[in-house]
Length: 266
Length: 278
Image (cartoon, rainbow over all chains, first blue to last red; front, side, top):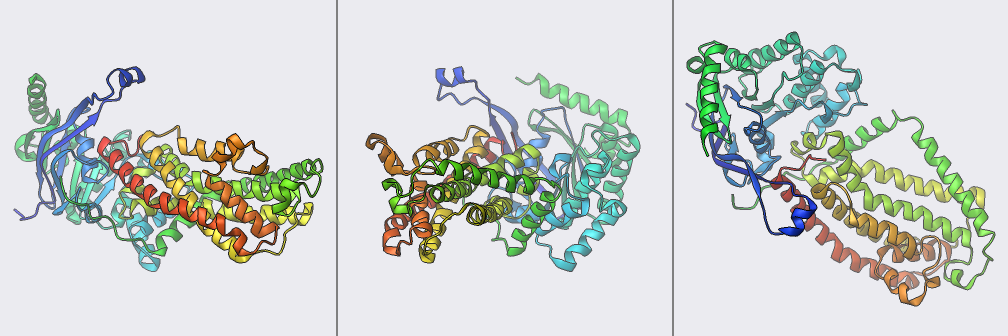
């Protein structure tokens, strides 16, 4: 086991303020109600592992990923990527992670795939020939070298997701944060992405992948480790071989039990 | 959760070049926007050219600015557009990135947030400066805008302080948009109120005294006053100095205030988890 884990969360707490209407604001101006997204979450992801994060909607998966990407500040506890505290050292923490957001609106639609990568590459400090080389490399890696000079708005959903991976790989970060990468994809495109993440990025390149998903089969087939998060805490955590044994049915049973027990809590 | 955050390193010129290239590449895909912008300049200049025929040359209230209403109004409208861009460009960038969905992708890069904000608005700011120059050139070439003996030092001093002042207002606006998303009060105060009371299309001296004092609280009053005197009235620097001094006071207050407010706004949005909400 490595001394410094790729990802570490200790007693992580996040509460969001509840939206209040105008009448409520006037009646109780100092009332600050919150909803708890993370409730003392602990997590440790070792380097080079594919770590699948499962959990129902609203369990806290996206909040955890956004905290690790420095987009949201935690209210308590601490989180670190590659030993860098995300709240106190956001600059080095950003350099340690690639955030492969599946949100297709995160690109400039009227620019080509290559032009998008040139722009984001410059923000990651890539310049001149080194930048062009790196862009050619990541485009080849994600299989978009033939479509690099087409406008982003002509890409299919699968191609857009692949370009998101290409962007996340520009900085050559050792940790990738991936939030539901196969959502809205057809089965073949989804399989290509799973194989790419598991086989290429983790298997061949040795990157750490924190992979949030709702797909139990995806986790059973591709993860090294699996955690189930519910109501802001990790409820189940272990190697995929022991939690799933390569079977979606076994994992489903464990998942249902973990989530069910968490929902009985007051 | 204590201690001061270590922020990203200062970005190099390559980062700003990348923002400019991105926006230029996007702009050229909208083929008619430049043509409609120049057409707008021509129509605006023509409108004031004919309105000016109603105002006799040498009106006492226009005396400090060269005496010609057309020149007075064109300089006012051209620079008010530029100042509007400076004060609203940054918030428009934040709002645009929130709506288009690109804000998160920008914020996970190692570039500091103020540099992202400035870089994203750089193209629009430069475009608006060019547009202002074209506006004045068109008005001079086709409608007889009469420049005096231009006071270059006055133009530069007033121009620089004006840019800093209105960028500070822009940062305050962007901070508001970052947290509250819409309904920017700075834009209303600085845009709508300045349009009426800042001396854009008529001299402030025409306002009744009971309301004129509000003009003295608006930076646009000093920017336009200093710029008109420097461009149109052949005024020496000493005559522009009160405007320069007033703008310097605005900058001394607004610049540090806006940067502090912006830092708080980013922290609040990250704390509330609403950074990319719209």
